[in-house]
Image 1 (spheres, rainbow, N blue to C red):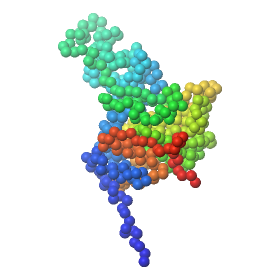
Image 2 (image 1 turned 90 degrees about the horizontal axis):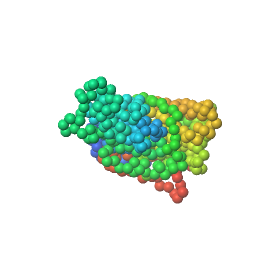
Image 3 (image 1 turned 90 degrees about the vertical axis):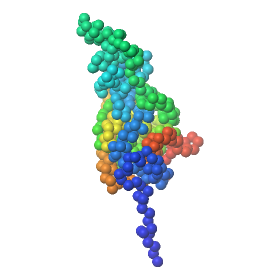
Image 4 (image 1 turned 60 degrees about the vertical axis):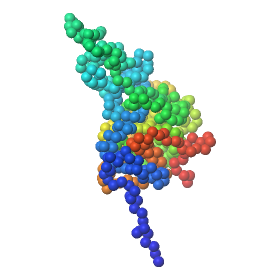
Amino acid sequence: MTSDTTSAAVDPYAALPARPVDPALFTHEGTYGPTRLPVELASTLLPDAYTSPEFFALEQQRLFATSWVAVGITSDVAKPGACIVVEVAGRSIFVTRNRHGALRAFHNLCRHRATKLLDGDAREVGKRGRIRCPYHNWTYDTDGTCLGTPLFEDSDVPAGQEPIFETSVAKGFDRADYGLLDVAVDSWGLFIFVNLSPDPAPLSTQLGDLPERFAGYRLDEWVTQRTSTYDVAANYKLIGENFMEYYHLPWVHPELNQVSKFSDHYRWQGPGLYTGMCTTPVSRNTEAGGWDGLEALSTLGPEDADSGRFVWLFPGTALVVLPNHAFVLFNRPVAANRTVETAVLLAHPESLDAAGGDDTAEDGIEQLAKFWDLVNRQDLEIVERVQEGLENPAYRGGRMCFRFEEPLHRFQNMVIDKIVGIERVPGGDALEPGQTTTRMFPDP
């Protein structure tokens, strides 16, 4: 007698929500049961999380408006009055340094009638560190103090008409009450972070053990060399999830696969709102390119000197650090199916000096930039194809491949935590004494 295994088979989609999911259920813990299972049993995050405008709006409110978000590079705001203009949770913000060199961040609007103060490409706040509103010339300093409204030095008030613009006689008005609206700002390593919460937890809580893990790299000294922007027709989480795993590497990245071998990858993560992996050892370049091109930093310990570190900083930033350069991807969600990505290539001054001349250093940087552009375009092409598939309501979710996708599971559960209102920092991999990495793949 033969058994009828077909009729007894369990429907793998039985526990998955039907599509579309009622947006009212997005904040309910029970909606995410299949993804909350241990990774060896888990299904992926519900597809609506990548396609629904309602879920996108929740993420803006509950993830990006409540987290420390990496928005820029510290070396790009090195001097008082230098600035960057960024967008977080749909809000324009600028970061600068005051006259004492301290980082300050503000909502990019005038306290008079909410006019945007600085354009997106601004690199300095204005002459002598003064921020002027283009509408009515209200002016602020780099500590956010309102200096004039608008009668003050160089206010361009027509000669002889100064009394008309005098505001000292205004009733119930004190310009000291009308400074710029502060945003919490902090830095770690090469990153500037902002947090829109009125009273956020310290940045160190979110970073966990990353400062310790990267202590040997002197990340605060690295300097931007190249910047590129990509308009991606995909949800920002797909970019992150692709970054977190090497399951796809042989098929999507034939060139990268030659210098970053599939079998040389390990998980590299402890407690903190991040996912982490490394490749050890770092392989030499091939004719297709690779990660050589500059000298390695001389002060690295033996493990760091022969490893590439790959970290996804929650919620939306990728960090790659190799012994001789770093590569960062800032991902700004624009819509459920669109992300603007800014790629930054950095190097340490020591590596540039060791190249033996400006032309040699430039050649090394250019070689690295071309290789990363190739790899990144391959990644973005594949995540856009995933986005197209997710738009099909026939797809209700897929099964995690636990051996390769543990970082995705970790990340997706961070997203769920924020959406349902849980503040939690995930723990790290269990390590033996002296062990710093966890093999992603079993020994052959």
